[in-house]
Amino acid sequence: MSDPITTVVFDIGNVLIEWNPEHLYSRLIPDEKERAHFLESVCSMDWNLAQDLGRSWEEAVDALSQQHPDKADLIAAYSTHWHEMVPGEVPGTPSLLETLKASGTPLYAITNFSNEKFAECQSRFPFLKSSFLDIVISAEERLIKPDPAIYRRLFDRNGLDPKACLFIDDSDKNIATARQLGMRGHHFTGAEGLKGDLLDLGLLPA
Image (tube, rainbow, N blue to C red):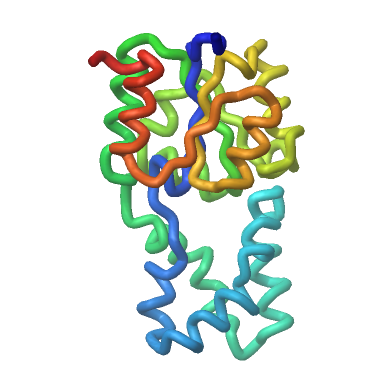
């Protein structure tokens, strides 16, 4: 018989709040092929991940603009208009978070996020500040999912038993690492699927 799940660990981007560069760049670069090239070759995911590992946005924009001076305005927009990429909450998930908190379930988060933008999101979405006992932020730790070390940072800092934790993330790779470390994983695709899993685990009232 598997150990009971008592603790829930959330990812944040595209689990609790939506994030997609297309929301901004579909406006700035209407041509689909041109936009895809820009997001793959200029403001790429690898470039963005460096901010999640602690590089400042000022440094990131400056360095990339020097490489692509003809795209400087578009590069700067990634930071100055960043919140256009985050149109709002993922439907249904914050209410599940609220229900879990009200029931006394210990809640934590591990997120790949820049310090600057996460602080802005906590101001914009107050539940990101009030819901969790601890949040492990990649930019603070200079570690990034799916590196096992960032999960261990959560366990060690809070005295958590991985076997008692449900980890919720929209990334298969991140879920795979969590499972390797002993956590139960939920690959998030929407609030209804998550609700069903939480009910099955006895974490939500039937």
